[in-house]
Amino acid sequence: MSPVETTSLQPLPEGAGTPELRMWVRLLACAKIGEKQLRRRFEEEFDTTLPRFDVLAALYRTPDGLQMSALSRDLLVSNGNVTVIIRQLQKQGLVLSQINPNDGRSAIVSLTPEGRTRFLELAEAHHRWIAALFAEVPEAQKDALAELLGNLRGALGKNR
Image (cartoon, rainbow, N blue to C red; front, side, top):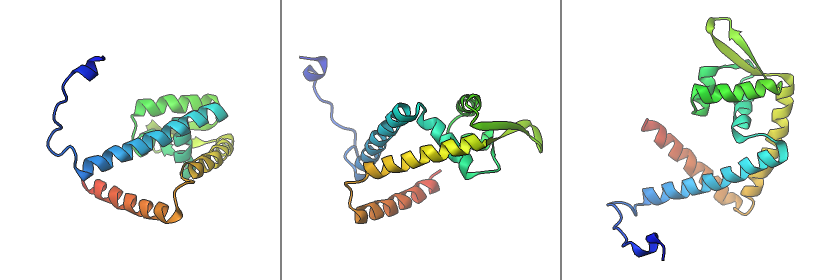
């Protein structure tokens, strides 16, 4: 028997079986399953990563470019993480980093024409993969879930 099998089970903390906790665990599980599949497909089919795609998507939505600090804030990651990804994308010729004319201490990052083309290629595949992930979910449930998650996002935003 393994040590896990021989130890006695400890009681769950108060509230461990609450609807909120069950919801949280299910949200995380669904997100992890989907993210794992997306990461694998980006790597296998395009030799890229999900974080690189996320950076390209953020820059695509802002054609005039973003300051590095705004990019890291939008993506909820550190400046250091964004810097590494930006350097990788620059080496591939997909992004351009220029000194901010209004603040010489910061840079504005934007997509190159090649970066826009690459993003559109990745985004089309991403759209197909997401559609496949949810193919078995009836349309009415997708709509209801999207509405519920929108409500949840709004409620979570109030708790910042």
